[in-house]
Amino acid sequence: RKEVEQDPGPFNVPEGATVAFNCTYSNSASQSFFWYRQDCRKEPKLLMSVYSSGNEDGRFTAQLNRASQYISLLIRDSKLSDSATYLCVVNKRSSNTGKLIFGQGTTLQVKP
Amino acid sequence: DADVTQTPRNRITKTGKRIMLECSQTKGHDRMYWYRQDPGLGLRLIYYSFDVKDINKGEISDGYSVSRQAQAKFSLSLESAIPNQTALYFCATSSGAILSGETQYFGPGTRLLVL
Image 1: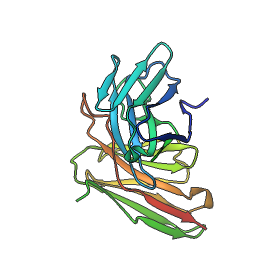
Image 2: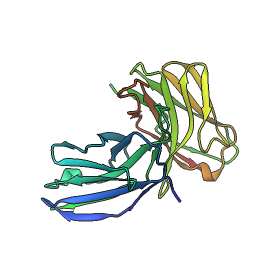
Image 3: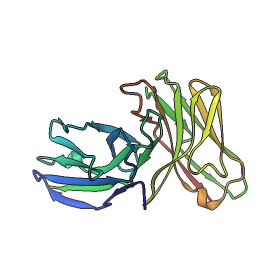
Image 4: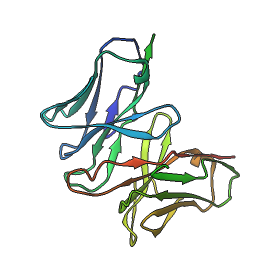
């Protein structure tokens, strides 16, 4: 079983749609959670951290469910520019070791 | 100017050749990392370094070596390249600070093809 699992997609949605991605992680001791965005042939960039109480940044909402060990990302009012691969990222242990585990990513394609 | 740079950006080499990928950063971070990315496998950690005198193996270090020449420089070497080392290689940095230290900043990547 992979330490971080994501549905690779692709998710094809029209502009303006709401889309949600889930990610599951296997290490119950993990304490830090993130969503990174990676555009085609480019480097990953931090989209947002995920906090226990859930957090929102504009059209993006992240949720954490520790009991079920999954993380979600909700994108409202999708834009063409949201087309990218979204990486779910979890730290390997309970402390700040700097070791992050990356999911394989979920690809989103927003169509006009 | 980019905070994390990698050279070369693209490289084609032959089996058995030694090559070096270089990474430099101007963010002043202590922590540096090397990853490789393969389709369907995501990013995997090769080596990481928390300061100039610290080098640690990641999950797939076999066939690779690293050198931390200075706080700002971290190079990855393939002593004898083989075709299954064909991948996209990323360097990353992080500050290690308590509140935000796990955010990693990536270089633009090096595409390596081993024939």
